[in-house]
Amino acid sequence: MRQSLLNVLLLLLSLAGLVVSYAPTKAHCPKHEQSLLRTAKSLSDDETKWIAKRQKKTTKSFIKFLEGSNLTDFTEYDSVKDLVHSFKKPVTLAAAFSGGGYRAMLNGAGQLAALDSRTEGADEHGLGGLLESLTYISGLSGGSWLLGTVVLNEWASIQSIIDQEKIWNLTSSILYPSTSSTKNLLYFEKLFKAAVSKKEAGFDISAIDIWGLALANQFFPTLEYDNLTWSGVQKLDAFRNHDMPFPVISTNSGPPGSNLSALDAISTEFNPYEFGSWHRYVNSFTDLTYLGTDVVNGKPTGKECTKGFDNAAFIIGSSSDIFVGTGAAILFAGLGAYTALPEVADYLDQLNPEYESYAIYKPSPFYEFDNDLNPFLQVSEILLSADGGSSDEVVPFEPLIQPIRGVSTIFAFDSSADTDENWPDGESLWYTYERLQTYDNGSIPFPEMPTPETFISKGLNKRPTFFGCKADSDVPLVVYVPNINVSHASNVSTSTLSFSDEQKLAFIKNGFEGATRNNLTEDSNYRTCIACASIAKSLQENNIEFGTQCQSCFDDYCYN
Ligand SMILES: *[C@@H]1O[C@H](CO)[C@@H](O)[C@H](O)[C@H]1NC(C)=O
Ligand SMILES: *[C@@H]1O[C@H](CO)[C@@H](O)[C@H](O)[C@H]1NC(C)=O
Ligand SMILES: *[C@@H]1O[C@H](CO)[C@@H](O)[C@H](O)[C@H]1NC(C)=O
Ligand SMILES: *[C@@H]1O[C@H](CO)[C@@H](O)[C@H](O)[C@H]1NC(C)=O
Ligand SMILES: *[C@@H]1O[C@H](CO)[C@@H](O)[C@H](O)[C@H]1NC(C)=O
Ligand SMILES: *[C@@H]1O[C@H](CO)[C@@H](O)[C@H](O)[C@H]1NC(C)=O
Ligand SMILES: *[C@@H]1O[C@H](CO)[C@@H](O)[C@H](O)[C@H]1NC(C)=O
Ligand SMILES: *[C@@H]1O[C@H](CO)[C@@H](O)[C@H](O)[C@H]1NC(C)=O
Image 1: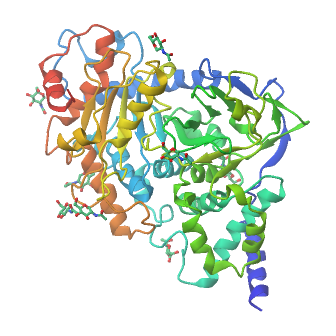
Image 2 (image 1 turned 90 degrees about the vertical axis):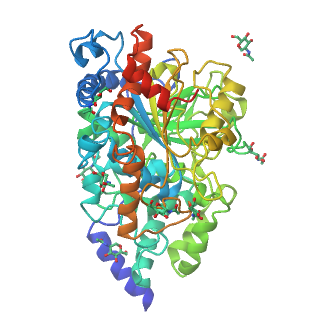
Image 3 (image 1 turned 135 degrees about the vertical axis):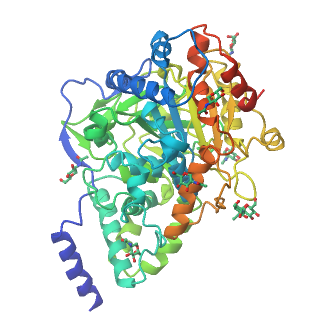
């Protein structure tokens, strides 16, 4: 009786177009490409071309940002425009948004809003104009939810998300969205059907497929799953017009049996064109559009390629699999209520039991790749992915510190829960520094970082701090912005899964205030100091002296 009611409702839903394909499809392979893989000796041609066009826009925006920042040094130049045009290279700025579940997503939203001219008040008492000046932006786990939401909703402003009600409706848990059990059944039925359709198309599934689809329901409620791919970002107007920074999502990946939490784990990135890694074990990238294609040494083995494997729901699910990581516990606890659904039984049957709590990337794009690939990776037909923060590097620096990308200042927004009270203590910066010291032997410049003990004792987790001010010009300057309580106790645990609308807004407001020294009330020069931090490396590179104004900012904000 209940079953037939469900079927009728499901039929209605499918007629309404709400049940859509999540399964990858077959497509012609790209003619122009011999191989879908390349060794990462350079940036992809697509990225190089895109960045050149983006930087025409960022240079203009950045000059405008500086004009609104009361820079009084550099009197030998007629204008900040002349100053910026005197630099040998465009100023390349980037922002990284940490993991930390909804806490990180919502604080991050406020921090992002503080940089965005489209936010009410951001030009007057914030850092409005800086977002428009960024070349790159990265996110992992909770930070990938933030990044995914704004990017796929056509570079939506946080202001516009606040002003509507569909996106980020977090009032009820993602596991029990409705008080009506019939509605919940339908909700889950839809997710399970989608996941099983992927299995039926020949691809292994795990708990991450369901997790990602559930997230998509909150982040992209008005979009359709079937064309919601990360490579689809290429087709968005805001991307084609270079109106957003180059968005990159980080995960950790490796062949089965490798330790995805080790300090030296492989950090992988999804950018709109490619998937791959700069890690010495991989150092290769594959065309993201055709991820999921059977390949040997990068060459498709069949006549047709796979498309749609890079579903955005799956990718942000992969980046945030920590929620599912511990034995898929949270998800399967939630599923207890739904075992009556045939889709759930189907799904549980179809799961690959060995890897149920990892995201499964099979076939692996790196299979038998003939370069200096790690031998385990080279022979593995499966690539597993886990949370981008699995190895405690919760701020996604990796895509931004590659020398080839030439980033000079990185804004690092950290909402991780390092202390017992769920505040950050700089541990993530320390791990990145430590890893580079241990494994990279100086090939990737990064500022020297203090230990978490020093971080806490110097109060560096209580307000923004600049790192790498005095280091060589090839070392990026890091502007570290911790999650702090300005007006809201924004330290809820990572596993908090629902927020009232008031809480949501309080988080976003607090994030804005934390990123702006409480709307410039704690330091009316803060915007000027951020301007100084943004040009510091270019000044150094071009042998231009700081004046007293920037010097006094560095005295205030630089570590060491
Ligand atoms: C601009 O900066 C100068 C020098 O630091 C300072 O004296 C002045 O008060 C600032 N003006 C504003 C509007 O903040
Ligand atoms: C700070 O600015 C934001 C954005 O304009 C605003 O929402 C918030 O209320 C302001 N905070 C204070 C304490 O005025
Ligand atoms: C938000 O979600 C809840 C629970 O599903 C629902 O009752 C409410 O109507 C939704 N709000 C909006 C504005 O869609
Ligand atoms: C996805 O499909 C919808 C409906 O066909 C369309 O409006 C939208 O522009 C598409 N989005 C992308 C990124 O292609
Ligand atoms: C994986 O690496 C982490 C961090 O070094 C370590 O704590 C953990 O014990 C390792 N796990 C296994 C299974 O070796
Ligand atoms: C939040 O921080 C406050 C003060 O630091 C602490 O008392 C409280 O226990 C923390 N809350 C959580 C949920 O960790
Ligand atoms: C690290 O770099 C130094 C100096 O460039 C070099 O002498 C040394 O051999 C390198 N060590 C490793 C393990 O690559
Ligand atoms: C957070 O800050 C508000 C405003 O300053 C204060 O009332 C509250 O006690 C703080 N909460 C915590 C947990 O620190």
